[in-house]
Length: 128
Picture 1: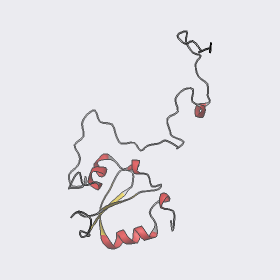
Picture 2 (picture 1 turned 30 degrees about the vertical axis):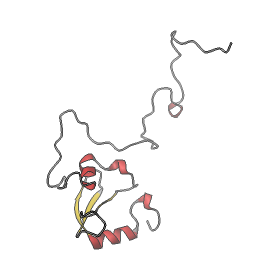
Picture 3 (picture 1 turned 135 degrees about the vertical axis):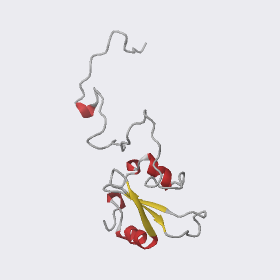
Picture 4 (picture 1 turned 90 degrees about the vertical axis):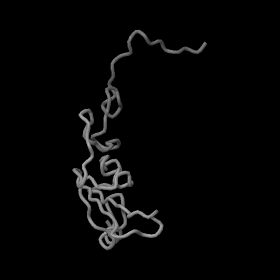
């Protein structure tokens, strides 16, 4: 926690956010969101916004509604004005690549390497 930002926020970041920001909310994954108490010079006249990830720092863990708020697409946070969801939208899922829960299709080496034999529509190339 002292030096490795990828395992969560460092003590310096937590100290800065505690002094300069106010808590805004938390998402379903346990990530916490903050907004600066005042506008800092050089921030284009906007308040700076932060996220402190729960666990490993991975930007794909931020749901769409909070991503929009962090990037000033939405002025109001999802805690005040929830993002409208369509009936066809799926729940947010972080990118699981590189984790034990990553997608492994049939025939992949990570799944054992066994795949079905090629069908009759395939002919191997032979150099002439």
